[in-house]
Image 1 (cartoon, rainbow, N blue to C red):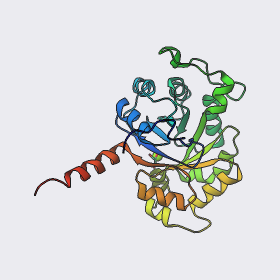
Image 2 (image 1 turned 120 degrees about the vertical axis):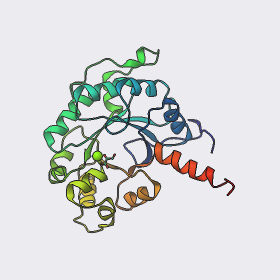
Image 3 (image 1 turned 135 degrees about the horizontal axis):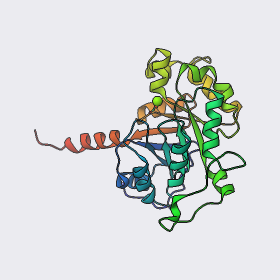
Image 4 (image 1 turned 45 degrees about the vertical axis):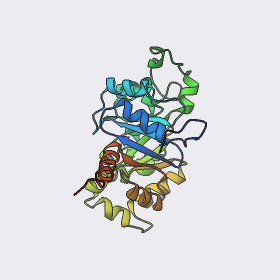
Length: 254
Ligand code: 3PY
Ligand code: MG
């Protein structure tokens, strides 16, 4: 599979039904290649992956324009970290472990410029000669996704989704299943109308929020989509290199 160009492909946005890739290992080259190969969005993981602020900036500088969105999963609901990811050039943030409307309001305040929020102006693209965005345009094109990944978050999911400025509910199945005392597989197998995933999807629909989630493999991604979760991290950089390695070694002589 070769690289695609912006003309050949119209990437789907992070707010739509889309397929993204999750990057743990720090490699601006890998991030750029994954965007060029066809993912709708590439997420840098600053919570459980290796990404620090400097490395987010390096990846953003080499991200190919027009070929999908750069997304950052920040380490925590931190005002400075959210602003720094967006200043570097991310068009969306995924904010982990949101459990209350007050926390969701904090995430929104950090993501958007006034009058919507309290983000401070200072985009870094001016440093490398890129164009900066006016506050209004940035507010229109930036996405705030809050992670629903605990029993407490599930209890407050209606109130969290109702917070103005929350664009997306993003399911963290590993933490959610740990918190509920179950497994990712059991969460996905539960097809009842009262299941945790059905509840999140219903609430998302009621409030006009996209529902996204971390799958990490195409097999799990299909299961997420069957449950109505549409904006899915369908692979990780580590999975892709492992699968590529496995495929390559199939030709090894025994
Ligand atoms: C989770 O599954 O808990 C996540 O945060 C995905 O990385
Ligand atoms: Mg998690």
